[in-house]
Length: 303
Image (tube, rainbow, N blue to C red; front, top):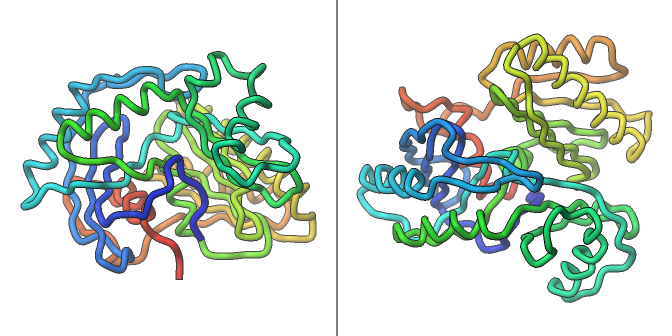
């Protein structure tokens, strides 16, 4: 199942992922079911800054240098690619909009009008995407400032790569989850942030992006609190009778430990480590598999 993107274009076999530490590239197979190649270039500390609507500004020269380094390792430069961005770059919220117009442009104008009083900027400064949640008149809205995203696209374009689909890491990874009748939770946990996706009935119902404290104990408390809140929302939507499955995608051991401890005190919740099957991403000594999974997920539409 494909859940949500900021730009809707057919997914190419090329994908890039930006993170706090690196720009990573992956080339998918023709069937988009595995990565054939992956390379990476380090990014400097603090190369982007966040604001009230996610990404606020970035070091374009750092992005350009990393892109040049990645492309220099490839036999052939990709001309178009999907882009995975850090979870905190986007802000999400659920909005009651009533009946949406059929025209996407008119629908986005209606959503922006409903959000006008909540935005810390002018509506024309925002880029958005939305997903119906299955409830009458309610949509999940993903927001970002337009200018910083355009700066990313322009930097890639200057390097000869046109960026098509843009999505957050957790939204991409959610496409790899198995189906299920009850709430499905996916937590994409990094050292200082977590992105949580709630899926039910094949629909993306909620996305949460939260900063995490530096200390593992406090970070674990924040993670479990957000999981608990997300599950409570899912059970209101889907009913208490369904068991819930939670998946933890993280290279940090404390994240799985904290989630499993939380599940021990919750009702009908099982927790598993999120992993991608052997052979679907290349074994590279310098890139953690965790960094490659969103690249694989960027073009995966399910069986």
